[in-house]
Image (tube, rainbow, N blue to C red; front, side):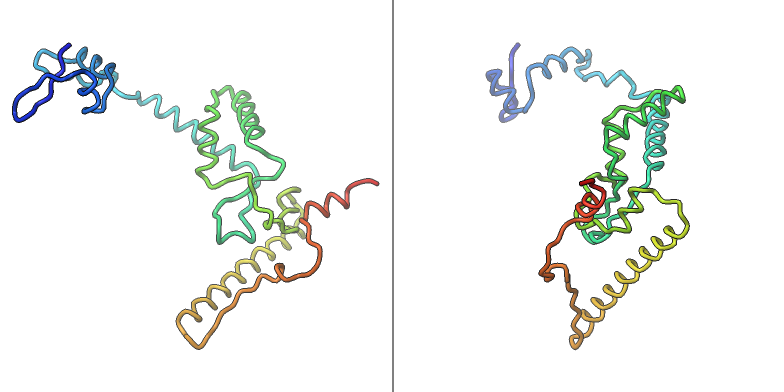
Length: 215
């Protein structure tokens, strides 16, 4: 095989290494292109025709089956860290392996072929879910709602009030920030009082464990 490159409108013979390095290709790619070369010198187009329509429909059905399965689990938005993350958190006793195994079992019960684990993982992440909930999200009311999945009306009413108050507080903070930015005579300050409390501090899970632990 002879390798050439055009130099000043003339073809000059060069070594194989220089040819491959200049074009940024491999010898295998060159041989494949030569096999596809037609009589007119053109390279034959890809003949596999892409994916069939039936395969596309099947993929879409698998994606929807994953979304339907994920949405069956209770989810909760970030509480104190909403400004830093848009992720939501499934129940803490769940993990990706557990959820995928449950999905496979559900599909088997319906006599359907499950999607691959990689597709399940990708869709899980694409809808803004994560298992790595931040520690300062450990609000007692929210953790109780997420762990116990309450159906008690009185608790659900309290939880909804809790969430409404959270929204109202954020609205007040945003309004104060806007006023301060528009009026130089106004100063808005946001204080994290937990940072200046001179007492021992532990997570909600720590005290819950102490409460339930038998001595």
